[in-house]
Image (cartoon, rainbow, N blue to C red; front, side):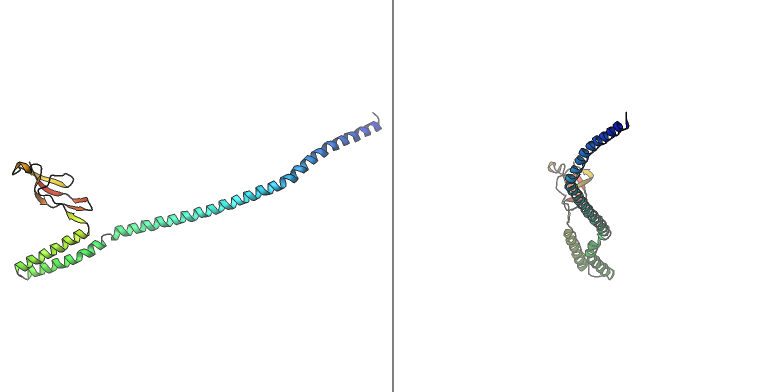
Length: 192
């Protein structure tokens, strides 16, 4: 080939390459111009979502901190309640103790037996009122049907008549309930 032909051929191949490149450049440049608003919208949306996620993380952390504080405060209150729970009960019992001390003092001085009995009865009445204020009541047992939920049989004794069979004949130690729960079972003698 001659130099002229080679030159022409090179020029032609350059033109062909330029023609091929130009359409590709045109294709590449157009989508970039179209993608720019979409990319901006996507980036804005991502930024908004990241900000919302960060806000939710902060709310979650505050909520967890509040819950942890609540849990610690509740545990402390519960421990204080257990530690000092009997305080009110003991404060209410102190007047009964004072009355018993006065009764013992009167006994040691050799006071009138009738007035001592009356004083002890008053103390007993005060104590029973205190128990009632604490929702504690005695279990009425004698003459009732034997109930294993409330009674503990100490012994069985032949029933004086057939109607007393399976019933409580005598109560040796009173039972007590607190809020419909047995605090102490009554120890009883059951008729057989």
